[in-house]
Image (tube, rainbow, N blue to C red; front, top):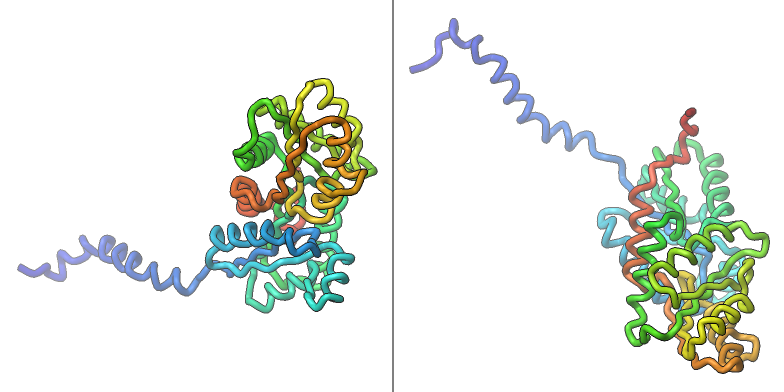
Length: 302
C-alpha cells in the first residue's frame, strides 16, 4: 500500500511543486505591494457654494481607490491665503506630498483637476518636480494624471455628462458653456477641438471663454445666426465658483446672463460645476489610473 523508497523519486518533482504552491501565499504576504496614495490637485475655491463639486470628486476617488489615502492640494496661493485668513487653511502641493509621506505612501498618483493643460497645469507639474528634487527617494513612484480634456474620448464623455445634466432643456434650446481660457492662448487649440466635438454631439452647444481667444462676442454672433430663443448657461469649470456666479450668471450688466437678456434671449442658468457630474468624475479617475509616466524616473530614450 505504501510507496517504497525506491519508487519515491518518481513523485519528487510533483511533491516539490505542491510545496512551492503552498509556500506562495506566505511569500506574497511578505512581499506586499507598496502603499499607494492619491493627491488631488485643484486651483481651489473660496466660494462655499462651489464645494459640492469637490466633495463629489473626493467621493469618486475614495470609492475608486478604497485602500488609499486621498489628500487635497490647492495650487492657487491667493485662494490658500484667503482661506487661511478665514481660519480654513488649505495646503499646497508640497504639503499634500508631505502628508502622504507621513501616511507611509510609496506610490503617489497626483491627479490634476484642471480642465485643460494650460499654465496652471504646467505650474502643477513644476511644483511636483521641485518637491521630488528636494526629497529624493521619499517615494518609489509618482504619477501625474492629465487634465480633464485631452482626447476625443474625454471630450465625448464630458459632452454626454454635461448634456445629461440638463434634463429640463428642450432640444431646440441652446447651451452656452463658459470656459476659463487664457489670454496667451496656451489652451486655445484644445478648446477649439473640444468645441468641435461638443457640436458633433449637439449642434446647439456653443462655447466661449472668459480670457481666451473665443470670447462672448463670438458666442453672441453664433447664437444670433442660429436664431435660437432660449439659452442655457453652464460653466465648463470643475467648480461653479466666482467666474460662474459673477461673470456667467451675475446680476451685473456685463455678465453673460445680463448681456444675453439685453440681446433678447431667454436665459436659464445651470450653476453646477463639472465635478458634480458622475461622467466627469469618471474621466478624472480614468486619467489617474491609466497614467504610467513616473516623474521619479528619467524619461525613456526613443
